[in-house]
Length: 304
Image (cartoon, rainbow, N blue to C red):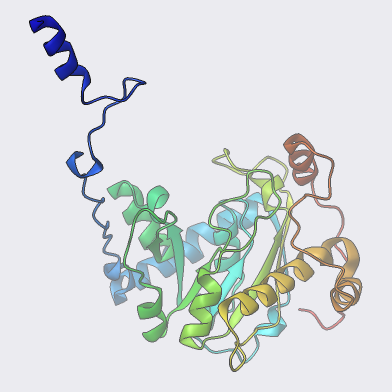
């Protein structure tokens, strides 16, 4: 009887499958990961700004322009624009940020802070320092399980424009992903305009996984769209939809030309280029994206 009693005691805390019946309240509590703070204010001091101008003008931009064949369109749409504004672009390559910073008018480019993934660019001290200095980058948390105090509203309040990539990460196949609401919410709540940017050819020039552009100086295109301003009573989702529509139109200019893309947009025939219209299989989307861009697409006669 003693043995049977011991067996009943041992098995009493388990169900018929042998799983523990320990209540959840008795399970050890693991506190959430504390927010990670990355101080980047030093990167916006006068000394750091002078160093950044020298690095960008003397090294980063010339190097990018010698390794690729950039074609910049739509800079006339930025005439008279004053910051702060939020620049948003599709994202498929590490070339995207240098191309945008190197092509912005000087009065805007010198006052831009770049949102960079906290878990990628700020996970090691050396990389964080280099990223913050060269790009005036600040950390953006991509994972909901972690909370990082956003610097974006504070930077806008201090007169800094922002460069954000609302897809949240670089494309794996050169096509786009749905845009997250963060950038649109920021524009609506802070009452600042948004400038859409369409990038083409950067995936073919330097796809994900490469640390240097492909040989041959691939043609890449940076297209600036007309600034969009939040309308009275407009919510973040509605503004995000307008933002996506503008980027889709800029993307389509490469194949359809400026006028053709505007007509298609007016007819509601454009959508974010996610590649879903292609046959199933990521290999096909990647193959399409790595083909070099052809000759320059038609553009407005007044474009600079």
